[in-house]
Length: 182
Image (tube, rainbow, N blue to C red; front, side):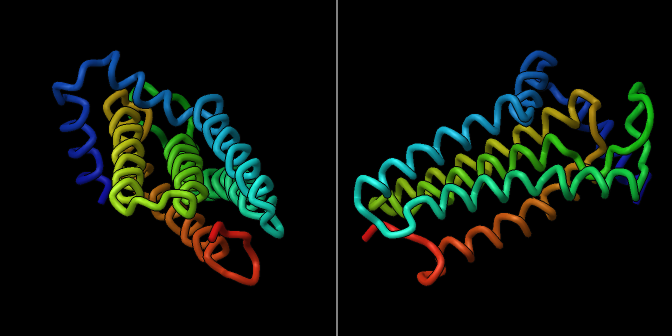
């Protein structure tokens, strides 16, 4: 696995994606960028739900923010337990799973999950979901292209993020637990 991971990393690092673009994409996984996007969407959804006089209007945004808070609580112990060394040029260990990838996937994914019930147009819902997936893939590509993470670091974060987002989606669709617009 490690040889395949290193080979794939070399292929991505040698891609034609300009270094500046890769750096920009990788930065979209920073907490300082992704979490404010989720916070803004959570505030917007809370405002809309309260304005619509929905019961428990605060619950979906709170659930999304708590899901985001779970990311470091899961990623940090996993990094310490695995202790994987980083790509060449990166000091120390603790690169698996990628915190930036998990931050991007959960923040942007939770924002989309909060917005979906408010969007009536199914094409807009689909396009927003696709845009989120493309954005997370772009962040992941940027992290690998810049040599910040191995591809398996990113893939591990995708799996962790998928579990968190599936749990959030299940909670949000539960009619007994969450306020949804009619």
